[in-house]
Image (tube, rainbow, N blue to C red):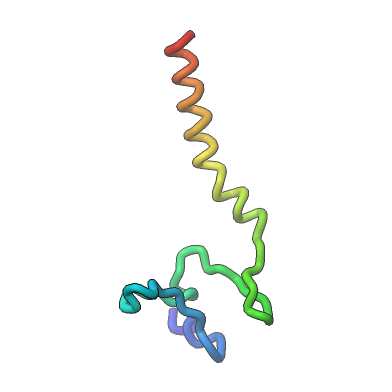
Length: 71
């Protein structure tokens, strides 16, 4: 775990400007976002699609249940 926090010269941090005590190191974030050399967020379309599977499934099941109840 320490390796993730020492792998870069500077470690990015996310914080709430209104409550700076509420902060998290990006290396500690569950999704581990990636940045390029300029500091821009790197898009990961496959990961985004995989993250949408469960919500899409829930919506589909709820829609089917509603249609069965109405029909």
